[in-house]
Length: 82
Image (cartoon, rainbow, N blue to C red; front, side):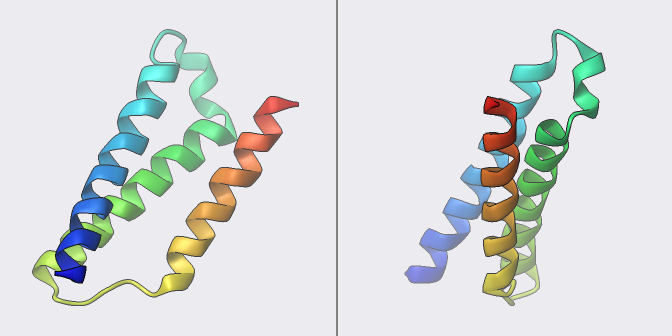
Protein backbone atom coordinates (compact mmCIF):
# COMPACT_ATOMS: atom_id res chain seq x y z
CA UNK A 1 0.00 0.00 0.00
CA UNK A 2 2.83 2.40 0.88
CA UNK A 3 4.53 1.84 -2.48
CA UNK A 4 1.30 2.43 -4.40
CA UNK A 5 0.79 5.76 -2.66
CA UNK A 6 4.39 6.74 -3.35
CA UNK A 7 4.05 5.76 -7.02
CA UNK A 8 0.91 7.86 -7.39
CA UNK A 9 2.63 10.81 -5.67
CA UNK A 10 5.63 10.48 -8.00
CA UNK A 11 3.38 10.48 -11.06
CA UNK A 12 1.24 13.39 -9.89
CA UNK A 13 4.22 15.49 -8.78
CA UNK A 14 6.09 14.83 -12.02
CA UNK A 15 3.14 15.91 -14.14
CA UNK A 16 2.39 18.86 -11.86
CA UNK A 17 5.96 20.19 -11.99
CA UNK A 18 6.20 19.93 -15.75
CA UNK A 19 2.76 21.37 -16.51
CA UNK A 20 3.10 24.26 -14.06
CA UNK A 21 6.55 25.24 -15.32
CA UNK A 22 5.51 25.06 -18.97
CA UNK A 23 2.30 26.97 -18.24
CA UNK A 24 4.30 29.70 -16.52
CA UNK A 25 6.82 30.14 -19.33
CA UNK A 26 4.96 29.34 -22.54
CA UNK A 27 4.17 32.96 -23.45
CA UNK A 28 7.80 34.02 -23.83
CA UNK A 29 10.24 31.36 -24.99
CA UNK A 30 13.27 33.51 -24.16
CA UNK A 31 12.73 32.95 -20.43
CA UNK A 32 12.95 29.17 -20.84
CA UNK A 33 16.71 29.38 -20.42
CA UNK A 34 16.36 30.46 -16.79
CA UNK A 35 17.49 28.08 -14.07
CA UNK A 36 14.04 28.03 -12.48
CA UNK A 37 12.51 26.64 -15.67
CA UNK A 38 15.31 24.13 -16.18
CA UNK A 39 15.22 22.90 -12.57
CA UNK A 40 11.44 22.54 -12.68
CA UNK A 41 11.58 20.45 -15.85
CA UNK A 42 14.42 18.31 -14.49
CA UNK A 43 12.63 17.69 -11.18
CA UNK A 44 9.45 16.77 -13.04
CA UNK A 45 11.43 14.38 -15.23
CA UNK A 46 13.05 12.80 -12.16
CA UNK A 47 9.66 12.20 -10.56
CA UNK A 48 8.26 10.72 -13.77
CA UNK A 49 11.35 8.54 -14.17
CA UNK A 50 10.96 7.44 -10.56
CA UNK A 51 7.38 6.39 -11.25
CA UNK A 52 8.29 4.33 -14.30
CA UNK A 53 11.40 2.91 -12.64
CA UNK A 54 9.39 1.74 -9.63
CA UNK A 55 6.52 0.44 -11.73
CA UNK A 56 8.46 -1.47 -14.37
CA UNK A 57 11.89 -1.89 -12.76
CA UNK A 58 10.48 -2.86 -9.36
CA UNK A 59 13.14 -0.73 -7.64
CA UNK A 60 13.05 2.64 -5.92
CA UNK A 61 15.35 5.57 -6.45
CA UNK A 62 17.55 6.43 -3.47
CA UNK A 63 16.17 9.03 -1.08
CA UNK A 64 19.07 11.39 -1.74
CA UNK A 65 17.70 11.93 -5.28
CA UNK A 66 14.44 13.27 -3.85
CA UNK A 67 16.38 15.42 -1.38
CA UNK A 68 18.47 16.89 -4.22
CA UNK A 69 15.29 17.72 -6.13
CA UNK A 70 13.84 19.48 -3.11
CA UNK A 71 17.01 21.52 -2.57
CA UNK A 72 17.15 22.52 -6.25
CA UNK A 73 13.55 23.73 -6.25
CA UNK A 74 13.97 25.67 -3.00
CA UNK A 75 17.22 27.36 -4.04
CA UNK A 76 16.08 28.36 -7.52
CA UNK A 77 12.64 29.45 -6.32
CA UNK A 78 14.16 31.68 -3.66
CA UNK A 79 16.57 33.07 -6.24
CA UNK A 80 13.66 34.06 -8.49
CA UNK A 81 12.01 35.98 -5.64
CA UNK A 82 14.96 38.36 -5.32
